[in-house]
Length: 433
Ligand SMILES: *Cc1c(COP(=O)(O)O)cnc(C)c1O
Ligand SMILES: [Zn+2]
Image (tube, rainbow, N blue to C red; front, side):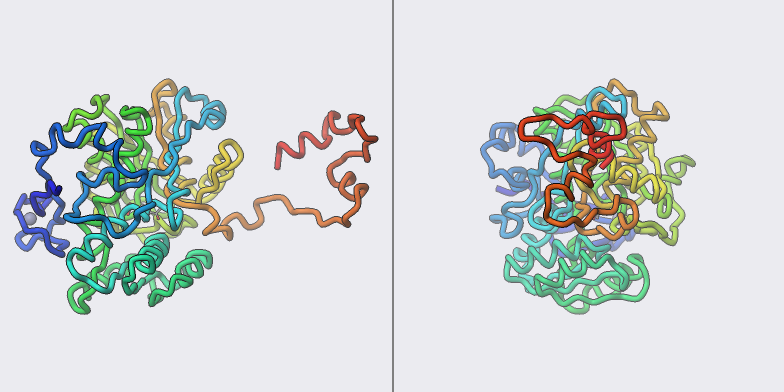
């Protein structure tokens, strides 16, 4: 059953049928999918969702597809981790990590938006799907296209991390590296949107693609036991996920599935690319585009398409914004790894670093519930950690050699080693590592 009413301009409200479309003809504002919430009442319930698959498709009644899903049947429903060790470290009471570094199959939040966009692309009859990407989107489009039997064309900035390039190429897409940054790639895709007959997931399928991001928010609420966190800290690149987490929360409130606790949405960006956070801090509605310069490549978008909506949602929800330097981002990546065993890429470090700043500033009170959205996996960007982690000893395969590097005399069978407990001994070093 489909509850879609059609597309609606976010600026002037003009209506359009369900078709490939990015903008309003009248005012050039972005268009968004509108639903019949009245029709959902009593049909879309906690029970109906609970009876669905353990994937993002359990929320399919709130997603813009007509038939059965054909992509991402195992995507989404990622862990919501109660982060007590990290909470202790930060001095807060109730902290969660929504961990899309574990998303299937390409380890980022993009598996959500691509699952919905590709299903819609098949419904529209497209055979080729394309994207403008900072890395993770290309990765996800390539994987899901391979599985769905679609042809994929992925356009990326020419100098992306090797892990993302190799991880994408292995699925067999046509990859094109474009000279310039993401904003140049995106401009190119927008210019050719109708020319090649492609479904460009974040251009002419953008209204459907962006809806997939709501599932990140739905899952947070459901996994908290149908409860909204008081604070959600979300990264901002093109400005898709932040407003969609908010839309997800509002839809659940509208349907009576959660109580409205006045959830605040906070934005995290890298200091080397923070147009949205700057606008929030100066209290303006519009942002000044920037030329990105940050290790957080996947969120390095200097001219975010949905930036104004990210600004609006943060303000309307009573949230705030914070940006983090590259050093702060890497510290946060390592803090999350050390305390919770989660290895995120710089985008996730950015979000956590922003959350820490907002907690330290008192903007996020320490006794309120906080969810930090971790959107990508650190194994794709290992080069950013270069030179920051300890060097690893290489030893001969002999017990004495091992004992020497762990600061421990070879122990008699069954006997404890005095050095191990001594200050500066093995224990401390293990902890630091
Ligand atoms: C794409 C992406 C984001 C957010 O992008 P939006 O365009 O703002 O939705 C965040 N983190 C990672 C790792 C990403 O790949
Ligand atoms: Zn319009």
